[in-house]
Image (cartoon, rainbow, N blue to C red; front, side, top):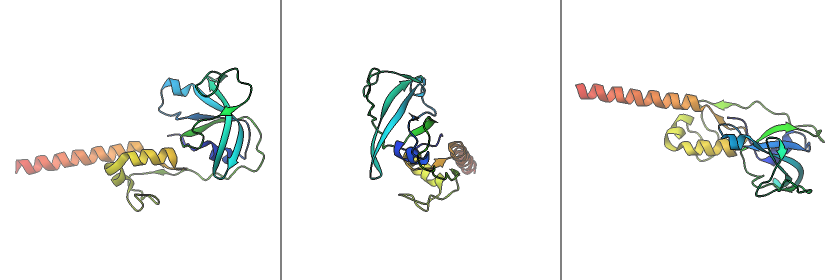
Length: 173
């Protein structure tokens, strides 16, 4: 999955450069999503979040949306700007402060232990088996949280196969 965040954290990560282009849910999305993006032209911080303003783009060109019309001359309030799921497409402006040092993102493997939240101290595979939606939520909303979905599905498949083999052995006794 592409690392994602809210628009405000992206803004700070790129050194407060304006404008910049972002996209919501770009990986594993339909073509309709892949062709959409937002040009962020203003940020008005209020605490951790605030207001982000800009223009809706389709295939890189200004277009009409429910929240922004193609012919608008003033940037419009961007919906869901404080939610996770936004990914940086490109930075157009120059940073106004030094960009944050970005630590490498670690992709969690099935045997890794969660270090926060409801399932703190539990293995990723155990959380996957109990409540995979939590991992999906965390990927969309927690900064730098990524899991190796292929490895989780592989381990889950191996566990199912082993259980089936064990059951067959028990039945044949």
